[in-house]
Length: 182
Image 1: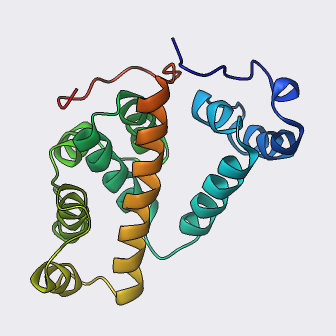
Image 2 (image 1 turned 60 degrees about the vertical axis):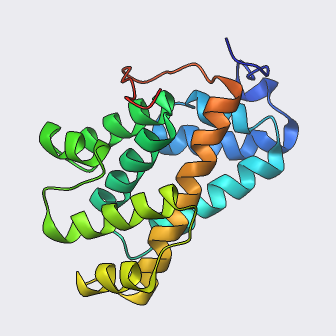
């Protein structure tokens, strides 16, 4: 049971959140519980959607973004995000089960993506205090300075959603997946 009330519909959300939720519904065909939860604070929803939208049009492809999301959710023990990103990874990014399993373990079967996932894992585990060697390693795998910054931003974005879902016990509305960190 969530620890804050989820608006049951777009019309029950705060007025400032309603157009944002209508945009989510238009884009996704529904409004997942994470968005309804975040809509409780129009400012938080606007910030989340803004960063999410900006990063979606960034340099990292959908596969890399989903790989990072899966690794971060696993470390943070967020079952909601694992369920959502397993679904998105399979259906949007076209990741196979072996890749999703590797991502949840902080790895990738793709050598370049492996460097990004490993860097993301280090960011989470070391709370951003990565070494110059860590940055050099991800750049040596072919990631530009801008892409390395985007990896950090994706870790932050996914940490935000992990924390929202865990703090408020968001009901999972995707096919359930359970973290091993829980």
